[in-house]
Amino acid sequence: MKLNTIGVIAAFCTLAACQDTGSDASMPTVGSDSDLTAFEGARAGQAEMGIQNLGYELIRTDGLTAYWFNRSTGACAEIVTSDGRYSSVTMLPSGDC
Image (cartoon, rainbow, N blue to C red; front, top):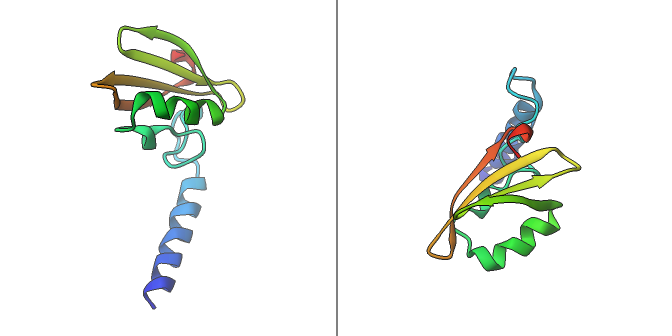
């Protein structure tokens, strides 16, 4: 019963994410393949290859802030590194990259 409830919730969340909410189309859906927020807290050196494997390329840096862009999806991420880890991962509109 508990597993069925989880399945129903997951199906509802998936369907809800597909609806147009009027948000900026250039922003990726949280939890999608284009969303890098799951990398927050990861070790910077180890996570970089994972980000590249998702199709992102480093566009520019500003101090400890790096901007990553995925040309195939148009997704842009701002990643701040602190103490060797990604302390902040923010998805931005593609124009910010």
